[in-house]
Length: 310
Ligand SMILES: C=Cc1c(C(=O)O)[nH]c(=O)[nH]c1=O
Image 1 (tube, helix red, strand yellow):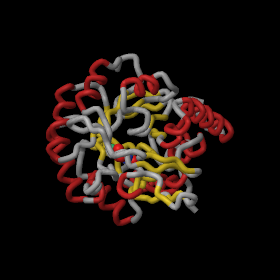
Image 2: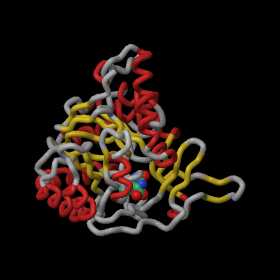
Image 3: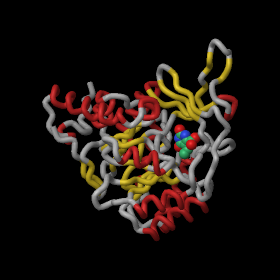
């Protein structure tokens, strides 16, 4: 069984990446990922200036997943750009960089800086942070998304990707696919970000479990797998010439297989990585190998996008 993937000019020996935001805010965390079984790694979404993020507690896990309202804590884009400049792109694993500016101007300033640096990285532009009080997710505003992508394409002259929020209606799948189809620079879409603004309740305490936004936060884990798979399949169908990165609900080789069957080129692991640590990536990789062996597949292309309908 061969898990190798070659896409958008990068080679990965397996399709597993951390989800942006998990275990990727500091150089130490990124280095731990680089030394893990990950096929590639992605940095925490960055802003123009460093951010402390929301008040704690801002993350909680449940039997079925997680809720977070981190509030985009990060060291600022210069820190991650510096890591990328020092990174051994030649011999190391592919490095992806997540960008999530607080405004159009901030996004353009950061993307222009990444363009100037001309590093062999892939940029994932985050259109879906659900946890900035008072700020809507750009990905739910189709006109604003189209404007942002058109402006970014002028300052960042290479293919890049977007991190999308989950959509829940075929009309919205279509509208966002049209926006992305109209932007030739989009080489990949990552589906999905956490399902925004859920509410987890602690029954004993009769209380919410995170402080920001009176307990509202992005939901991840088992809760989101069906929604993630739907978004992967719907965008893979609508954007045949672009890659889809599957993210949401992956905690074993089984869900990784499902995401790829639904059309994902590679996949990202979030909640499971947060809860179990980088060792989960070797476990998930091995489980995917065994599953492929059981099913008689030798490579990911043998089943990618081959989800049967009835
Ligand atoms: C970049 C901010 C995000 C955050 C955050 O930093 O609160 N949490 C998520 O689940 N998704 C995000 O995109």
